[in-house]
Image (cartoon, rainbow, N blue to C red):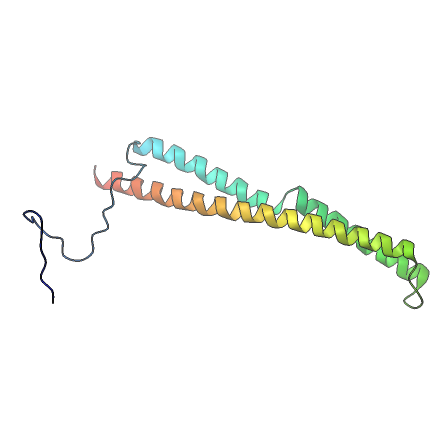
Length: 139
């Protein structure tokens, strides 16, 4: 084992790992303020989770898929499943596919942003809960 060289006198040494990396950004608030902040963050997290699933892209995708289902059912009833497909029907099908792609990409972007926001809010809520517990033990 190599010897250690110190630049100055060494005081008491912690046994094991010391992860004390400074004060939390939540330490400056009182317990009552932290509870208010916690409720605001929890409401924002709930709003974000709901917005991840109920938004204009999800609604547009749902309406497009329902419309495509009705159109497909109508085409099967009127044209049957055999024979050539007219160019007009292919154009309508292509429009549905493009709309599905646009709404799907928009939904993926919304969900990506929402998952990042939820992760950040979860980290902040964890820090707030730790600060509240610390303030309770310091009483």
